Length: 494
Ligand SMILES: [Zn+2]
Image 1 (cartoon, rainbow, N blue to C red):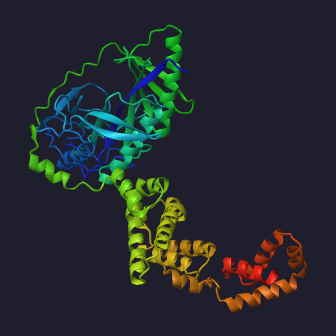
Image 2: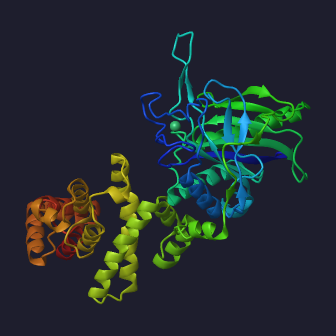
Image 3: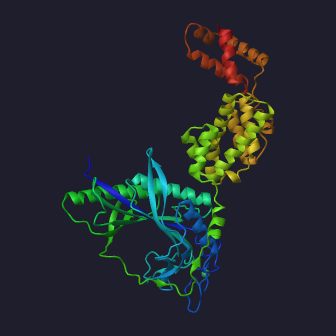
């Protein structure tokens, strides 16, 4: 049992998906392959140019701030953060020092069944820098400014995380939130969501923050964040146990070696000589303006999860999968609404059947449908299968018109062509034979040809039944309703 507990805080940059960059009208498309094509005089830092703040970026920041229960500043301003680096042609980055757009906030986090409160310190807007490219073997470096000036929202949390898993879950929730709000793809692998973590250890039960702080950088996936923090806990514990003093420092995560390495030790904070950006006016957010933005807030994932569990009586695990992706959640509700139309048209009041069908819809959505969508890298919204056809197929399975196995084939075809399930079943000859007369005949024939197996079964060899079912299925080209075949066989073998 360890004597120490970790104190973890996060600093997250979210790249906002605005149409244009933060302070100019260059397109916000930093992933474009051709270097230095999405640039202009402003974002390439040429003298005599003036920045203009991007309203869309500001509104998206406020929307996220509201979702994180942050105070929205009445007045906010931009500041210059001065430092020199070749990817920053102006010699300063426009950021926000003491008047960020979003102030204190907080969210509930549930991990391992424990609800925890994570406080948000602040969230501020800033511009991204360009990218340096170091060609292999060359004695020079290149700079690509396509990313320079892209809007970033930096979110800083209080050191409230008590385990690496909590930090990972928080980040995953934040990605989901950003996608729900439509403000960013928040893809960590693509750098749309970047995370630095601060971690230090204190004696269990100790009060106050430890005298040092280790910052970890270069983590490009949720797993890397969790692994890097777990690694640091062990490393720091060993140092402290050896009686060593840990200095405040920056370390980089080396993913292929699963270790952190020292980048620099710092005494005191960096001095960026911040001063108010003289070329941009102070921002004033009226209550009406903030409320107007709040009005755009969609139903947030946590609330949606609670509603799905309540309304559709689904297990939490399945609901979590459905709600992870806003498009999928919406699609699922579309299928359910079509099923409900069917229930009311048929005057179905059988609660068990309704629950079963909704459960089936959830299983198909999170199962084969998700599999096919992932393979094509498209969202539920982009699929060719309409909610109506989806529901139609579920009805056909329920009515025994198509077997579950055949339904998978039908579904894959619907996914490919957007076709109607009943047409596909017809065209492919997949209609399930539930006609008792036809099945009885097929069963009798199979028993006659496989008299030995039938005898084996009567003598207690249970496996023989499966063999006979298989023979009937084969004889009917897979179109027989297997449950009925089973039943008829048992009757005839008595
Ligand atoms: Zn520009």
